[in-house]
Image 1 (cartoon, chains in turn blue, cyan):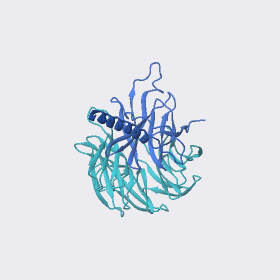
Image 2: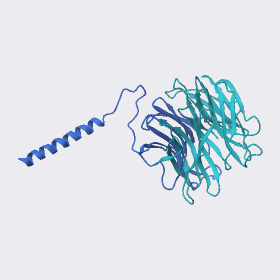
Image 3: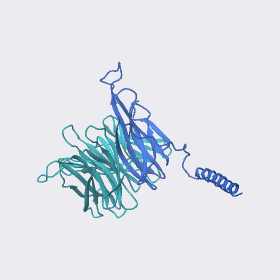
Image 4: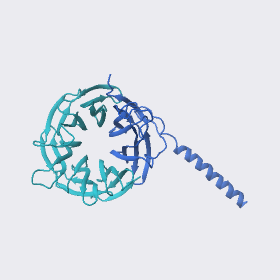
Length: 164
Length: 244
């Protein structure tokens, strides 16, 4: 009898833990800002063969959000004109950190070169800005994006300043 | 070269980003939903290097006349909602100096950068600290004493009216190291600390609610890749944590 009671108790605890876990995973809603997709997992901001630099930081809520760029100069692609084309490949990154460690991180890797240079708070969100390579040629354009808490983009304006 | 390296947000959540477009200083205004309102070039500077909100205006810093062998000069420009200039301050009064970052203070702001030390001072450039009033009047302009090659790259206001500046300095025999300067509300230097291993520098700083700061940049060991560097400091400059 004691064994059955103990087993029932453990099963009850297990069921309760599943219920609590499900409750804790429910999204909090009610924000007045546009909806954002669910937060991504936390990737490494740079690979071991890349250079990484933190460019700027803001304090947001209870954490620091750091932005920067990482990448490397790879050999010029075959048959490319080395005067106008190089092998630079960089991505931007965001990382939320506290004294306890990294809360979340996100890579922005949409082209041959993508740099995040600045960040500022906009309500509970962040706005970030920088430059990116416009195709293979050594021509750059500006970009600005709004990022939700957790690192997901709400919108981004690309190719700002592109010749018309 | 085209790109954006500064961004500020107005009280209505509209956004102003600044940088350079094909060799000319450039500003872009965007609403909070991502719709571009206007963009135009900025007279008097070649590149916008920093931006901050100041009441209902945006103040930007810009650099002009930079060459491969010499530093340029700087301007602070306050802009209204349409991007028109309310006031302009030309800096420094004499010689060269480049401003890279801005932070609002209670009744104006502070701009920081790098400038040659005055004749008679120690050799090399120094961290340049400019405090200005809400109407653009320059209250103080000082190139800090240091070990040589100092540069201030970031600044943040802190709750007691003071501010924290982050940058780098060359210190023999260790080379470039990250530096943080803490100033009180009167602009007096309270402390200066260096951080990181050989060849480290700071690019950003943010105040924390407990009176400390988070400083970010990069560090590079000999023969290794450049690694991002993130450190939490207490109010006295002691390093409490690093990440990741």
